[in-house]
Length: 185
Picture (cartoon, rainbow, N blue to C red):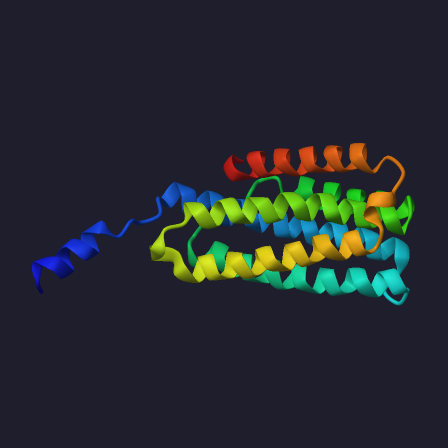
C-alpha cells in the first residue's frame, strides 16, 4: 500500500461511539413518540375521515422510521432510553389532546414537532462522519419525510389555530427537552 493511501485512511474521521449511541437512542425515542402522537390523533379522528387519512399517511412513514431504529438499536447494541413508557403516554396524550382541539390544532402539533425534528436530524447529519454513510442516508431521508409532514401541517391551516404561536412554542420546548433527556437517560 502506498504512503498516500495509508494517509487517506488515517485521515478519515470516525464517529465517536458516544455520539453514535446518542443519535440512535434519541432518534429511536423520537420516532416512537411520533408514532404515539399520530396514534392519539387517529383515535380521535378515525382512519377514514379526510384528516384521518392524511394523518395515517404520516403515521405510516413514522412506523417505517421506528422500525428502522428498532433494527439500528440491535445492530449497534445501543441501549434504548429508559423513558419509553413516559414517551408512550406523553406522545399519545399530546396527539389526542391536540386532536380534541380540532384539525387545525392537530396540524399545529405536527408543524411544531416536525420543525424541531427536521432541525435535529440536520444537526445529526453534521455530527456523523463518513464511517456511517448508510445511517447518514437514512437520517437524510427521514429528515425529508419529517419536513414533508411539517409542510402538510402548514397546508392544513395549522397557523390559523387560535393560540398557534404559544402552542407551537410549548410543543417545541417539550420536544427539545425530550431530545436532551433521551440522549442520556
